[in-house]
Length: 293
Length: 331
Image (cartoon, rainbow over all chains, first blue to last red; front, side):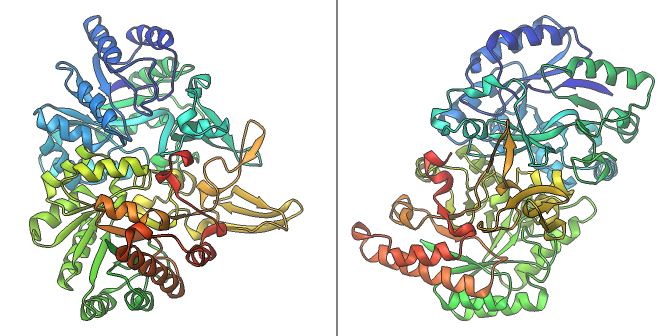
C-alpha cells in the first residue's frame, strides 16, 4: 500500500504553501496532491502558480504529483480555471466534480475520481472507468465493509486491475459544500465581502455545540468534521481488502508525523489508542462518523 | 413554466393535481428515494393509482429514484426504475450514475431528469449528463445565485428545473455528509437527513433542548419557537459566540423571482416537501398556481401579493422565508 498527501483544504499564504510542499518532498508520501479544491476566491496561488509549483515538484522528485481541482463550480470563470488546470499537458488531475471528468474525457486523458464524486457502487465505477478514471478515492462516508464488497465485485467483473483504490485515512474530513461562506458569516460578513478571512484560520474555525462538544470545522464554503479521522489501526485491514493508497490530508500541524506513523504501520502494525475527544473512525466501522469504534 | 409539486401519499397527490400542479413527483416506499420516512411514499399498488389519477387529469408524474445504490442492493434501485416505467411515469429523477446508465440503456424513451442530489451546478457537468445519458432535464441545487442560473439557462443544452419553495437545504445536495457524520445514516444512502429516530427533546433548567444522536442542536427559552433539529439549523458556538452558525430555521420562497425565471426559460419550478401534509400541498399548490397564472397573464405588471406571502410564511419553518442562495447577499 502506498501513502498520499491529500490537497490542503485550507487557505494558506503563498510562501507557506511553497515551504510546505518543499517539506512534503522529503516526507514519506509516495503521491502528493495539490491545488485549490474549496473556494475560487482563494488566489494566493492562481492556476498557473499551482501548475508551475506542481511541475517543479514533479521534476525534483520521483513522487507522483497530482493537481487537485475544485469541488463546487458555479461560474464560467471557475470553469475557465478548471480548463486551464485540466489542459496542463503533463500532470495527472484529481477530478472533484463531473465537470472535470467531462473535460478529461474530451482530452482522452486519465484522471483520479476524488472523494467528492459520488461513486457508491460497481455500476458507477464502470461509468467512470469508461470516462478514463485510473484511480478512485472512496467517498469519506463509506465503510470498510462497503468497500470490501465493492472491490470483490470489481474482481468478479474483471475490472479490478483497471483502477487503483484510495481511502481518505487521516485528517479533518470534507463533509459539505455550500453557496454560503461560513467563515465570512462567523465574522458577520457576506461572502462578496469576505476579505479572504479564511487565511486567518490556517486550520479552519472550530464550531462547538453549546455544551462544548466539538461538532464541525468551518472552512469557508466547506464544512469539515470536528474530529480528525484516523484509520491508523485499520491499515492492515485496508491492505488486506486491496486498498492501494491511504490518504493523509494535508494540515499544518501533524500530517508529516502521520505519514511517518502510517508508513511504520505498513511495516509493523501497532495499536494506537484513539483519543475520542479529537479523533474519530466511525465511518469505517458503519457507525456515526464522529464516533470511535 | 411547469409547477411541479411533491406528494408523499395519494391524498397529497390528489390535492396537488386538484389545486393546479402541472406535474407531481413521488417516491417508492424504500431507501431508493431521498425522503425515506416512516409512513410515507408509494408501494406498487399506490404507485399505479397515482399514475392513473395524474394521467386522467392530463398531468405528469415524475418518480424520484434519487439516492445512491448500495453494492449489495443495486437490484432494488433497478427494480424501482422498472416499476416506475411499468406504471407509465413521465420522467425518472435519478442521481446515481450507475442507475442513470441502466435507465438510459434499458428505457431510452422514458425521460430522465438529473436529480438535485447529483449536484450539477455548471455547464460542463450538464454536458456530462447529456452526453452520457441523454437526459432531458437537470434539477439545479439550491446553491446558485439568480445571475448564475440565468447564465446557465442561456447556455444549457438541456432544460433546467429550479427549487421554488420549501425547506431550504443550504449545502450542495448529494454532497453533504453532515447527517451521517452525526448519526451514521446518510441522506445519500438511507434517504433521510437528521432522521427522526435520532431526535430527542428534553425539558431542562436551561430550557427545552433538542438533540440529534445526543448532540445538542439547540436550546429554546420559553418565548422561542422550537423547530425540528435539522442539524444545519441549530445554534452553535464559534469562539464564545452562540448563533445559527450555518443557517437559521427558514424556508425558501421565490414568488418574487417568477417573472425572471419565466424570462430565462426555466422549464419547471419545484416545490419541496414530500414529507408534508396534504393540507400543506394544497395551500402551496394553490398559491403558486395563482402567482404563475398572474404572471403569465401580464408579466410586466406582476407583483407578489401580501396574502400569498402570508400563506406561505405560515407554512414555513420558523414562519420565515428567504430567497436563499438566489440572492447574493444571503451567501
